[in-house]
Image (cartoon, rainbow, N blue to C red; front, side, top):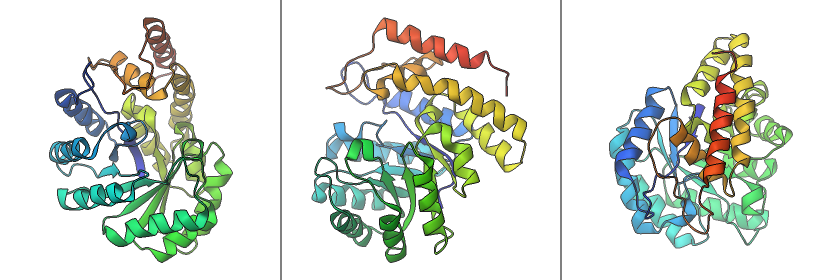
Length: 300
């Protein structure tokens, strides 16, 4: 169901930490106009952990209206409070959202039995398509291929996974195990530079942060792969490998992604919710240098 190039959108805020709706609309339109296949709001890069339910509902209404069915809208509803997870999920269902993305409960490091119960409760309560979100470096626990397999077979509205694991063999094992029984189940990689190996392994694309900055680069990569134009694939992958350095430029990678979007021409505040450390001038210069380095490579 969810295939190709998906963007986990930044949440653009003003200098006081309030939603900057005009610039959000410009950002959304830029993503869609440059070929992105779908947008996730309130993922990790979207700072899902930093907003209350009231704020999230307001934002959901806004993005559903502005996207206006041009591409699928996914909303991250993960959290450690089950009542709030279910409330937001049900709100999304009635607001016109196309799917939910759910990270496993973090901090507690649940066992597989607990994680299976958590995801199953959401799947039974909300009828929207669900994408599992595996990010063990942040959540403290891993969604193993066996667990994903059990969930995919038991709950038909669990239709996809974003596997943010810096080890493609983990993603490959999910692909091989789950797709053998549910070939329509889609597997996206969370690491930008894994698009090609994800597809070669039988996966379906990426849901990754650099698409905020260079959506056309990624949509060109996807189109070239589909058309077997591997010279273009190689050129795109080379640029992406340079841009990956952006993740290491700031204390919290969210801030670096926002700064790179600003560097590309959208005049936004790079404010990131506390306790993040805000951007420095030196960091912004480094980000601009990385973008210039990528732009100097052979054009695609």
